[in-house]
Image 1: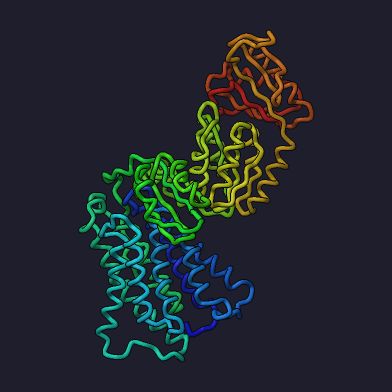
Image 2: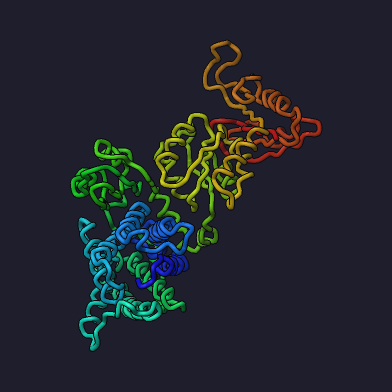
Length: 554
């Protein structure tokens, strides 16, 4: 560009992201290929956010810092790498390759003014790079749209009656206008290409939908045109969401959409594709000799990362449960009231390991995403990573709700490409009480400290049925056992055992929450009569399978 700083470049990227965000859910609802997991808009937006964040890092606090001071090659390489590392899912990875291809063309022409000619060449190289990144390119997708948009720009230039090149001293306004005019014509071509997609790809035709990634690309370029002109973006058709169906595609048999980065030396992307295809499908391995981005649909994320154990360091691991994503997408498209509302993106969210229908409902009422821990509250690291992915925030607090889950949760936090902290909640009732203190506008560090503070003012208890005879002879299998924290304090009859735990927790307490399990032997009315005095009892159905009652005193 003729400017000497990154301000105008950043404005173009910001315009693209803003326009994509305005239609992100519409793009998500179109997503059926290769898997109907409803996250194409999300993944493309994450890629652009990574680019925008990198531009801000390069510019720093000094807006007067020039492009030449930073270094043109450094800018291009940094932006391409940021897009690569920020990408998730098929659509995000392909978009990162479009960005990388365009960047490679731009850096190969040092000193040239960015005009329609250079934009056309950059977009053509971007399409070539994206096609080469996919093992079996499918026509009718974002790949076709990118190629036909590039072809339109090059055709316009070839048939232009005037020299399309701008004078090196062209004013910024003239440069912006020329680029915007070329891109607007390309957007129109892209829109027609999107509409033809179902003719080229059976999965789109069967679902009655256009390609989500291709549509997203036209939205991105329309946003760039708007930013360059300081005006509204060119009009684009809206497209009806897909019919609720699952196009026949073999990746529907795999559960986890797995994305991660690998850093090392002498890396060769093609070397790993066959190994990953033994573990799943939708394989993409892109990057260069020092940094790779890997995408694969698989049931064994740990085996996918193990492929690279001897060649580099694995980081930025993101695992999404496609079964959950597909279910949520279908619910949204059915028009269910809660599912149809767009999940608000917040600064910090939370995920909790939970067992019991009532407890799941209570955590969700507090805005906390839940992971089904099963009767033993024992999810895998990859179940936890998938849960972290589902939280619509880039900062996440994990409530493990069991001492046995903390280590797996901390491992997931280290692997995740989000900023994740694990709160020391070692029981479901403690996690529930702490979750009340969560605030979505705080940072993850602030929320974690608030939760820790809340836990220090909490005492917990429980009553469960003994699974075996006590080695000390205190109780027999089938009898009630009462705990305060981890200490056994009472046993025998369920009612008397629960009364003992309530009385132990009542000291200095204002409120005791009692969560009844699925097989609790006493009705709520009976429980309410077990404790007298000034302590308030809050009785709710937790539905947990392992404990008759879970208790928390505040």
